[in-house]
Amino acid sequence: MSAEIYLLRHGETEWNLDGLLQGQHDSPLTESGRRQAQQLGTLLAGYFDGETLPLFQVSPLGRAQQTANLMRAQLLPAGTTSAPYLIEPRLTEVGFGSWEGLTFDEIEEEWADLIDSYDDLDWLFEAPEGEGYDHALMRVDSWLADQAGRLVAVSHGLTSQLICSRYLGLARADVAAFTVEHGVVYHLHDGKIDTIRG
Image (spheres, rainbow, N blue to C red):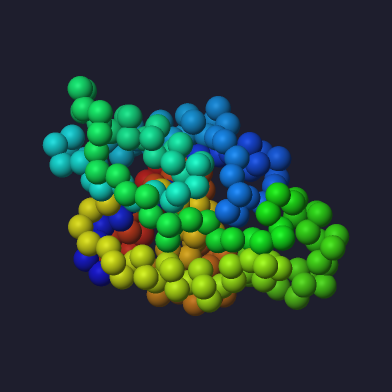
């Protein structure tokens, strides 16, 4: 794949603070999350000369849109009000079905046998009425196959873990090992991933 991708997770949200599983539900960015988004924009500005702004591809979920808009405001040259921007459904978070809006403790209380049978994050793909691993992987693979050139992608925790794992050719068992933090840019290029921090 010839694309050069600057991948990042949305800023911290209120549900993140409350320990609630978001999935394809939404909650707004916290003050810290807004600062993270602005700092990411400032950080990325050092990688683009201001004349050739990258295409932004952004999950349709509100927390990713809010993050992208705050970032882009830092990237745009003075007097510029727009830049290439694409809402990309394949970047949305993995759907967690019946578990969305619940804490881990609430999930474990009702589905303890299911959760105990998995290691790391793999149990998230087994959420009742959730998206599941195979479907999430298909859309991530489809998205990666379509990319070319330089772009910024704003996505979510588990979806970004899948993207990074597939980019590196890792197995399902290794998805959880590739953690994706708030406030960090993952630079996918030349078959490797560099971590860019402020």
